[in-house]
Amino acid sequence: MNQIVLLALLATLGTWSVTALGAATVVFFKSPHAKTLNVMLGFASGVMIAASFWSLLQPAIELAEERAALPPYLVATTGFLFGAFFMWACDKIVSRARRRADNEQGKPNERLNRIIMLVLSITLHNIPEGLAVGVAFGVLQNGYTMEGLMGAVTIALGIGLQNFPEGAAVSIPLRREGYSRKKSFLLGQASGLVEPVAGVAGALLVVYVQAILPYALSFAAGAMILVAVHELIPECQKNQKKQPYFATMGIVAGFAVMMLLDVMLG
View (cartoon, rainbow, N blue to C red):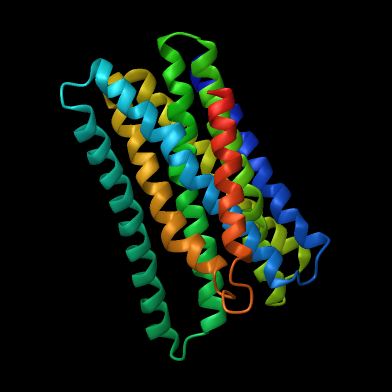
């Protein structure tokens, strides 16, 4: 196996393991306070927003300046919009499948549908996250530099950080619905299993098709921004009237932590 691809695989196995750790919180908490879950989701969205710029868009623009035939701003914008469109299309497919299941079953089980949508949405957005890590390590094909290695590690670390609350965000609601702790944990960690697969695919694409690298980075950024804004932020703001700034501070903290990591290690 190509050494770069192996590094991408190991890194994404690491991000998946953090998802599993988050899912394992269901063993210790029967029904955590809503504020805890909200601030965790807010933190995750802040990490994703910061990583989208410093770890993905900024390197995409710099690489496009060096090797792309098109203007860098056009490369970054095109990849970003395609990434957002990809996640939007995935969401539409899932929503249509849910409506079809409701029609077949008669009266919909709203709580179960919400859980299914949460599991699927987190699983789906783990695909571009895995791609982002794979692409970041694929850059090292051009030569091992400390800057490149730290950039790849930073992306994996940032995605791993926000995977922890995501794992909990899947397993804990399942536990609330009466699933056993074991089943809740297994389903929670399974939502992150797509990351190693996507990571290897992303690394292979970059290693063997160098021209797509700036597009791939900005694609991952677009996908992450859409998920953060459409899925995580609205979910964490559900109790906004009772705690107006609680989840918002989680978003700010997540953004600050990821920005600090990127700037210090980049």
